[in-house]
View 1 (cartoon, one colour):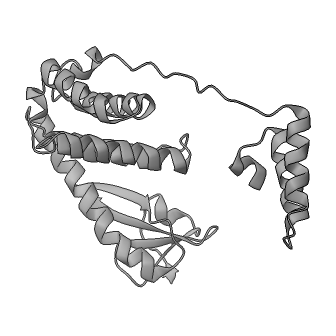
View 2: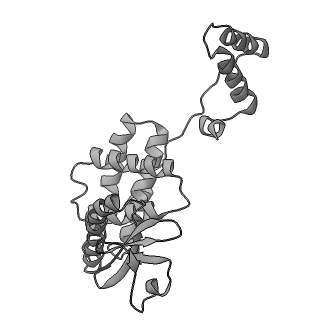
View 3: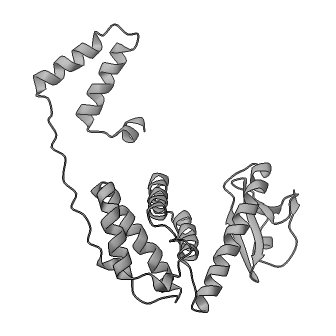
Length: 235
């Protein structure tokens, strides 16, 4: 790599250096590669989320395709035209850039998107201005029969977020999914063992005869007495 030349803000700092691949630069403190290119006349810089140039080069094409697709969607929105798929591309980019969401939450939201598109045929190509409250209610009625209340509610929320993108881009007024009522999530009735029953369970694990029986029993007690979820316990 060699120091970048020019007068832009990126080149004023020695923290940024060019790579041997066009439109890819590296942020020295972290070693992470970034895409740096013009899209629609605007200079953008986006993380490629890797410190390996070969991987960054592979991801560059996908990123530029996504950026150009979003630009086209915004141009169409400015003309009063936007498909649901166009709004979805913008939403997915916003979702990816949202640092307040955990990676697991982003994955779950993506699954909601997949369920939404899969159960509403032709939705991606549909003119977002023509999506009506009636269509949203009809889809929700079908969807609710096959999915749990929690999945239903999160998918409804995702649909509303995507439609809000169209509103913010000026492609339509009002959110037709706002009329969909969320399903009631019933709390599970847990049947927990009494203290003596739990201690007998721990002892049965401890004396199961496995090489790790003692460790397993300790883990059971740790989870139960601490009230930890699996990820919390791992940390």
